[in-house]
Image (cartoon, rainbow, N blue to C red; front, side):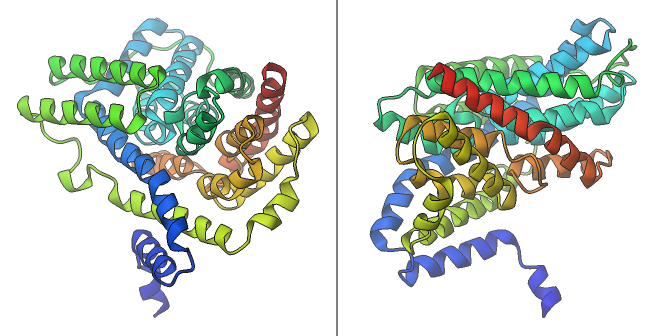
Length: 390
C-alpha cells in the first residue's frame, strides 16, 4: 500500500484535497469565489506564458541568444559569463523565473561545454538569478502577480515600487557569485560550432513577438491577455511553417503544474479561513519602519524555505495588511529569499531536473551553500533599498 501511495501523482493529490476542502465547506463558498476570481487569471497567465516559452525554444530563440552572447564575448570568458547573466536576468524578468530554470539552463550548460568552460558555475548563476531577478515586473513571478492587484488597489505602480530593490538584488547576486567563481570564469575560450536555426523566419517572429509581449507587460496590459495573444500567434505561426511541436501537444500546457498550484491556493485559503492568520500575524508583527520590515522579511524567508515561496506568500499576505511597503518586503523575502532549500521555489526544482537531463551532477550541498552565501545579503540589501527609495 505504501508503495502504491508513493506512486500517486502530486497533481491528483492536489485535485482531491482541494475538492474535499471546497465540497465540505472547510473553505467557505464566498472565500472560494473570491479565491477563484483572484487566482484564475494568474493560472491562465502561467499556462499562456509556458506555451510562449516552449514555442520560443522550438524556434531556437534561446539557442540564438546564447550563440550571440558567445560571439559577442570574442573568446573572453568573463565577458561570456556577464552576457549569460544578462540573458538569465532578461528571461526571468520578462518570461518568469520558471522559464529561466526550464529553458535557459540547458542552453547555458551546452554553451559552457561548447566554450570549454566548467558548466556548473554557469548553471549556478542561472539558478541564482532565476530567483533573485524575479522582482522587477508582475510577470516575473507568480507571487508578483498576486501582489500586483493589492498594490493597484492602493494606487501604487508595481514597477515604480520594485525597480530599485530588483536592481539591487541582481547586482548583489552577480557581485557575490562572480567573486566566488572568479577563477572558473577567467581566461579565454575557443568557440565550437553551435546549432543552426532550422527556420530563421520563425526565429525572427519569435523574437519580435516576445519583445512586443514584454513591452505590453511594461505598458500595463493585463498579463494573461498579453501572454495569451503571444501564445496564439506563435502556435499558429509554428503550424503554418509546418514546424514540429517543441514538446508533445498534450504537454504544451502544464496542466499538472496548474493543478498543484491551484491546490496550494485552496489549502492556504482554507487555513486562513480556519484562523491561521492570527498566529502568522504574531510572528510577523506590524509597522513599516525598517525594523518591522526586516522582521517581516525574516519570517517570509523562513516560511518560503520551509514550505515553498508561493504558499508562503499567500499565507503571509494578509499580515502585510495592504501596506505597499510591507507587500513589497514580502515579495523580496519570498521572491529572492527561497535559496536555502531545494524546494524553496518551483524554479529550483525545475532547474535541478534540467541539470539531471543534461547530465550535470549538482550535489545538494552545492545549492545549499550558494543559498547560505546569497540569501541574507540579497534580501537585506533589497529591503534596505526599498526603505531608502520608498
